[in-house]
Length: 328
Ligand code: AQP
Image (cartoon, rainbow, N blue to C red; front, side, top):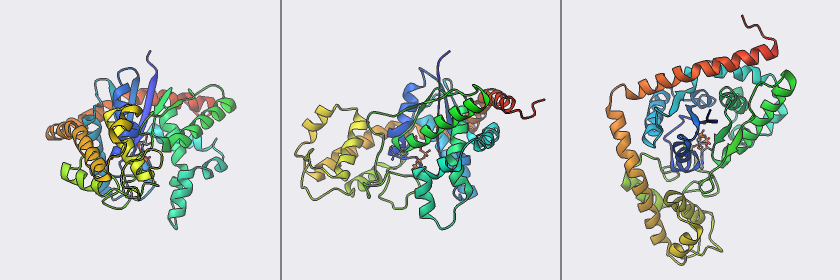
C-alpha cells in the first residue's frame, strides 16, 4: 500500500502564490506516489469570524482552484473538513490529552491572540483540530509550508502522548517542507509571511489575479535602498522576489545568480511578474473550464468525502476503544 499523505488549506480568502509554492504545487506533484487526501479546512476557518455567505463561496472557489492547480480526483481525495464529522469527534478526544501549556506556546496562537482583544477558544484549539485531521487518516507524510512546522511538531507530540497513554493507536507523521518557497513573504511587508487574510491590496498575489493586477502588485513590491540586485546585501523584499521567481521557474541557485546579479530593480520586478503570469495562465484557464461545468465541484467533494469517511470512522472507533469510551 502507498504511504498516505494529508494536507489542508483554509478557505479564508483567495489562495495566493505563497500557498501554492509552499504547499499546493507539491500536493499536485506527489499525489501519484502517495495515497493523498487534501482537505479544505472550513472548521479551522471559523476559529475567526467568517461571513457565512462569503465562506460558502470561498469553499467553492478554493475547491475549483485546487482542481485547477492539478489535484486529480481520480488519484486524490479532495474533501471539505466539516463534511466528515469524525474530524471534530477525534479533535475532542485529542483535546483531552493535550496540555494547555503546549497550546499556549504556539507562535500562531500568540500572534493571533495578541492581535485581537477577545478571541474564541477555537483559536487555541486550532492545532488540536489540525492534529485530528492528520491522525484520523493515519497519514505518514504532511506536506506544508514552513509556518506550519510548529503545528506539525505538536501533532507528533499529541500522537505520541496518546499512544503512550492508551496504546499504539496513531501513526506519528513526518513533515515535508519544500526546498524553495517554504515561506513566501508579503510583497508590501517582506518581514511578514504572505497571508490570505492580511489587509492591503498589494500584499499577496492571488492565483486568480488577472495579469495586469499581478504586474501592478509586483511592480509596487517593497525592495531596499540598493539600485540593483546584489546577492550578498539584498534585503528581505528582493530576496522574496528572487525566491518567487526561483520557485516558479525551478531555476538552480547558480542560474538565478547569473540571470539576476546586477539587474536593476525595475527589470527584476518585470521579469518576476512575467514569470508569475506565465505560470498562472494555465491554472486560470483550467479554473474557468472547471467552474463552467455545473455540479462538477460538488460531485468531486461528495465523492471525496464518501471515500474517506470509512477510514476516519475506523480510526475514531479505534481511539474510542483505546480510551475505554462506549463503542457498541
Ligand atoms: N506565505 C507562505 N509561504 C509558503 N507557504 C505558505 N502557506 C501559507 N502561507 C504561506 C502554506 O499554505 C498551506 C495552506 O495554508 P492555510 O490556509 O492552511 O493557512 P495559513 O498558513 O494560515 O495560510 P494563510 O494564507 O496565511 O491564511 P490565513 O491568512 O487565513 O491565516 C499551508 O501548508 C501553509 O504552510
